[in-house]
Image (tube, rainbow, N blue to C red; front, side, top):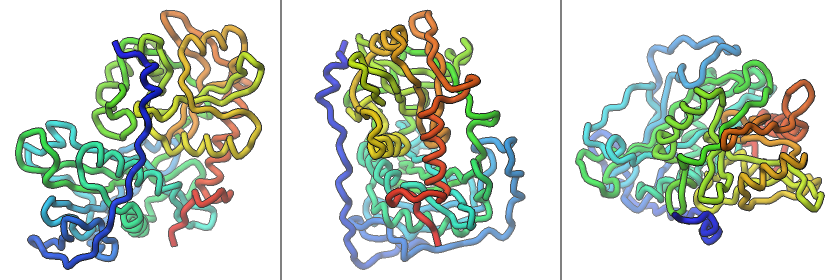
Length: 404
């Protein structure tokens, strides 16, 4: 069995910028296509508005995730010969693809998760969209699908949000969840790089992740099932990473746990929790406080929230911030010795999800949290700090992108 110690030799491969070549554009059918060497061109964007608008749900705590979609969607077709089509904003509709499409048979598809917010002045904002575009490009590259100009995609996305801006809640804690997706749509069976692909974006209004307050959860450390492995797609946001986690998640829920804490290797190295990155705030054996999370070794998803937490806490300079491997044995020893301060997951949906208990090998370990069983001090601080930046209440670098 491959030891996790070998993971240290794996390095996360950064995206190499795609060159945008400007050339005359032939046409294919009713759509305009660029040449195969070009990328998305936002100046060609066409808008077809829906003639009948859908009723909007009530923006309160009963709002379900992923059920009510906006009136429109963004679509961009790609063909290996002719390149990208002119981007289109069209009424939200079911997709029509061939039954042989590789996205259905071989998982040739990837996606992103991001949000749009309205600040107190009604200005629509995106949070670090460049990071999502980079990660989507990395996923496309890993699956041999077309890469694209992230800035041009963002410009198309901005126009999409302008068209459907009334779907963006203007209440604190609410946002518009955005799902950019890329699927291979070739009309033939066979495991090979995509000949045709569809880029599309759908969106839905969402409420607070924590409906009843910022409450910690318990998780089950999983040794049998694995989320990712060296050389695989753990660092990419592809559908194949998620479906295999459904059974372990169901088994954990049957035992009363909210998420699975994913482990790897004979040493049970700690990796991620559910579909979130995992953070431990503890005192090391030398007494120094440290915030630690698994490194981007190719098995860990480079979360936008993860990166934001690392940058913020390093800016504070109040404790050490580390990206390095650690095992369940390390975590249990720290818990038994009273050195764990708090633990939390981090991701787009929850931002920060505090954890107050971990079950491992049939034994449950209590994790400290804040007063009255609520989130700890660091979890709470990070949650509010990130929310303030996302909603434009606080400026930090260029993370909050206003759409005018």
